[in-house]
Length: 296
Image (cartoon, rainbow, N blue to C red):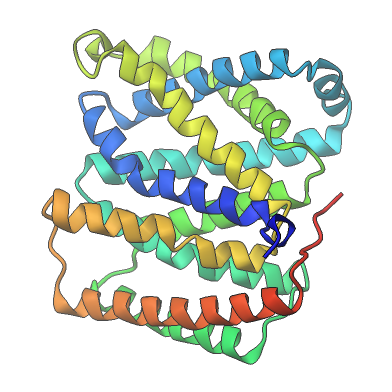
């Protein structure tokens, strides 16, 4: 087929979620730092990187326009709060050796994206897609029930990132511009945190090179995700988001030795079956309508 038939948004989303799926490795290496310190460094180094990119791309006039629009600033303040909270909860889960719990959150997240796409954006699901969603809902309910308690970490991760993605989809700003404003809004809190509660662990471990690299590891997948959200249906983003939790679960079990009882394995198996059904329906639909219109 021609290259035009390949929606670049799909490639962006696959790349973003692959990076997110491997992030536990990165944060495990940074474990001598507390979750709050890791988060503060992520945001500040991301801000520095994004500022350099914006300067090279000469985005100054666009950013000035954004700063003059209170509604857009309010939306970005909300999305910044959501993504900051999401990062903090995820880092804490990884540092507490609960990578499998975090992966559950991102298995739930696509359900929330699909629901938001249908309810808020009026996107439609065919019968196979709806059947896949129902299977996934049952699997998530089973996983939650077998834990014996409400999966707070998973629900917070799923909810914050789902709503974050929706806000970014409907906010008329480019990916880099929006991320720059978000990190700038969060940076004063990060500076205060490091001054008041920062520690001296950076110099010894993990080292400044790894801390600075956290800006790259944070910025690149978010730019890719924000770009993808503008090019594909939001409910389809929900499908692609299974990549990250699958990789995280594999790391939890095969690298970090976290237990995976049969009850949880059954729930994940149901989710993967639903994924196959949903993917088949999505591919069939894309062949009928290969060109997916992007938001202007």
